[in-house]
Structure formats: structure tokens, C-alpha cells
Amino acid sequence: MKAMICLEDGSIITGESFTGPGEAVGEIVFNTSMSGYQEILTDPSYAGQLVTMTYPLIGSYGVNDEDMESSAVHPRAFLMREYRQEPSNFRSTATLAEFLLKFNILGVQGIDTRMLTRIIRTSG
Image (tube, rainbow, N blue to C red; front, side):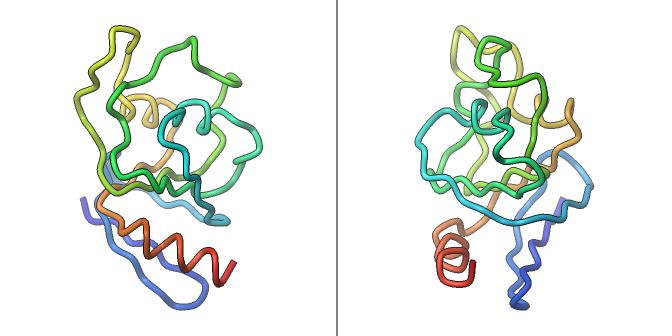
């Protein structure tokens, strides 16, 4: 399903929702971590934000209850270059998509995260 990220400066970035239809409004931020996406999603400091991951492949190790920083997912959307649908980790109990859907969070892949990060850095 096609997704559009519309920025305050008029820029429109397209991607693909891997969690189905939805809408998210909030401050857009980026995170440069290579791993730990479940901890990022459950970190209350990201409440109400649209989090862009700069590492190109997200979802490869799935999610599990042990890596929760809190009992909820706090961002409104999770943006990335490429989503890995089939995790490969013995600790995984669900895919990232299943986890986001459980908490009604929009997941978008196919984003040019390098370009988006530059926009965020220069425009705020």
C-alpha cells in the first residue's frame, strides 16, 4: 500500500506501508542505531514522533517481550529503507509488522532515509 510522508516545507516522500492503511501526524526524527529498534519503539522519549531509522535494513531479528523498555510503543510511525518480513533469531516471538499492528503504529518502508535525514537535519 502506497504511503506518503508530507513535510512542513512541502516536501513529499513516498514509500510503502507494511502495516496497512493509516495516518500519523507528529514531529519527524531520525535514529542512527544499527540495532535495538524494539527498544527505540518502546522508549517513552519518542512519544508522538515519527521515527526514521537510518540503518537500511530493519526487522531482521523480529521482536520479543524481553526487549521492551516499557509496556507500550510510543512513536506514531516507524519509517525505514527496507523492512525484513521474516526474522531470523531464536528469541523472536513476532515480526516487527505484527508488533506494530498490535499497537496500531504505522510502519513504512521504501523511504530514501538518507535524503529524509538530511531534510530533518537542515530544516528541523
